[in-house]
Length: 217
Image 1: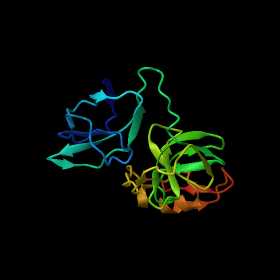
Image 2: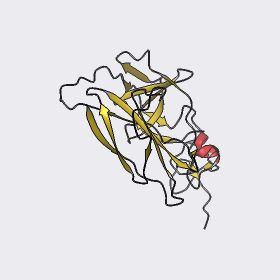
Image 3: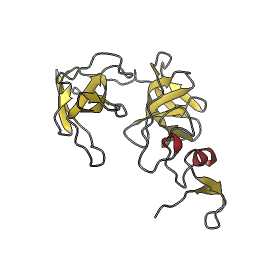
Image 4: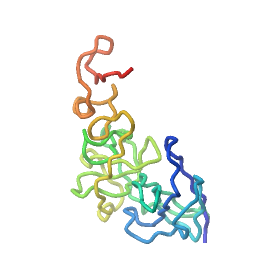
């Protein structure tokens, strides 16, 4: 059996929780059995996971716990064990971008923020699909998290027909976010700009139009 050491980056300084709930599974939608024997980690941001099998994809997430109350789970992460160096990962379906596509936190543009991009010709592992089966949840090509990309405009590689269905993720707005959790910035398109409380208009310095946000001193 294998052992790995997982670690995470705590958020902004604030209330220190009583501990963290650790969830490690072979199920991408976390509907299976938690393999982390301790369930709890101390206030450290690292923890060992033992009893793992080789040639296996694992998924993990954490939630802070305060007074026996669970906070929201983090975005899911994954890792593949390959101690022998001989494990084939061909069973993990991939998706190829047929055009440049935005990859969102969830399958509702204008509500969920963009986390990255799947560019034309680029591939990424498929993790799950949306409940309406119109979106893939993939490993973010621009980061270590998971994001949703529209199936229209992609080509799956491998058998992706049995990928699990995921509920829409819970919005995790940051400080300064507008309605729907979007943070107003010049990188948003017209629909997202309005949803984030900005105004999409011409800017003499950046013609064509960009998202303009109010500044708070």
